[in-house]
Figure (cartoon, protein in one colour):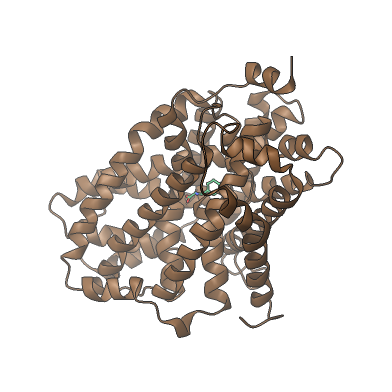
Length: 456
Ligand code: PFF
């Protein structure tokens, strides 16, 4: 029996084609779109950021997703196994360690924000989130996030939920949940969009988001947009490789990559269209940072009829969207511990959750009693966020694109992307060109620009 036949027998696979899209979109869509995208766009000047973001998503993101997909499906392995099978003598697999580090750092701060979502869900259901003014919403979030024990408790509760779903295995829980969840979240966002477009600050909000001021494009904007693109697409750390290892042989990889990137971007844009008109209507600062969405959204719900119902529903869906993302990022290290270190699935999940719990508590406290503890001028939360999204993920993406573009057998790449020649893929040449030249060069230039070695 060949290796691939053997692994096909021992590894589970996603049951349906819809399941493939729903799960990869489930991984991509999460707090990155609804919480991180608006705050990054807000702190980086709106339109200028958007322009760079679109470039990074489609010119770099899509080819790199294809690369991760073909590595995972072609080898039916986690990120380490994939590098090892494709380059048995090389040292490429070291990139896998970076992916695992990034996944744990992200899981830690992500769980804190998911914990905020839990708190706001509970407050919505109990009706205590119905406040009178923007100042009160600001004060409410401030009081909660600096209060130490509640953010810590919610972080740990969220990680426990994540743990419970993970020990049940890959396909069942995730697939069923994301199949139902994603369309509902999309429709709700559409409804909120329509509402936001009727607010008095709608014009100003849309101008902020969609009218690029080219003079604002600087190294920080480019680095921020690149990091956000990688973060939002769950890219550069082996997540898509791990998921693709569960794809069936008939999954069309390039098409799935384009659909995933498009839907993910659509959700982020919808979130932007919901948030920014409200930011300008209610007098918030677009550059408020990580707390922005948790102050603006409740103000929007307050202005709606049946606000508490919308608010409860929204935070509940956001929580589920976060879970489908944390499940996917946890799966990176769990697949590694199980397949490479021969641990049981349960021990691997305990280890993953334990590490994230320790770091997550530090991140949660960095809004409270650890607020003054800074490394490189950043709190623990901001440091984890910055290092993983703006540094580790783009480096991971660069390594993946160089590896697949230059070192993996051309035939293997073509066979994976065209199902062994069963259809003609017009984009094939473009994807390979982007992987060989565009992606590595652009990522390198953004890095060199941000450390001041060159001026773009
Ligand atoms: N893409 C997710 C989001 O936008 O919320 C976050 C994420 C998931 C990042 C999985 C990395 C990852 F491996």
